[in-house]
Length: 99
Image 1 (cartoon, rainbow, N blue to C red):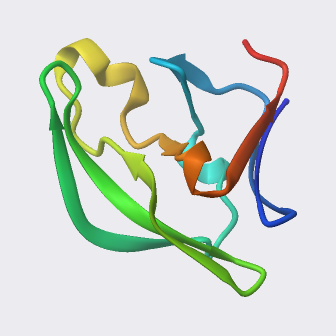
Image 2 (image 1 turned 120 degrees about the vertical axis):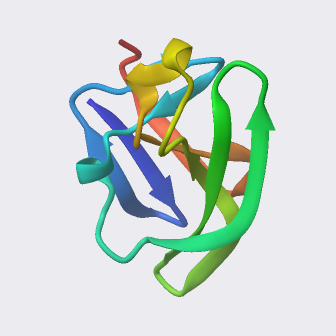
């Protein structure tokens, strides 16, 4: 079981995540409702495609661009389509048993 917490609040919990390049990608249904808000920020990964960022809010705390996903990843990264990764440097703690 993998868990993402933000200032002590569970914001995502999943039996299984996709571990890629040092990040756990959580299935979208495992993220708590109301935690993510769309950001205008986008980045391009040469092999995964365009990442869309999200602000994280929980328990009265907020962190800008602290999560990202690939809504339309390249064919090489299709397994992470729609999954959400969290920036652990932005106060999100991901813990649990690595798959």
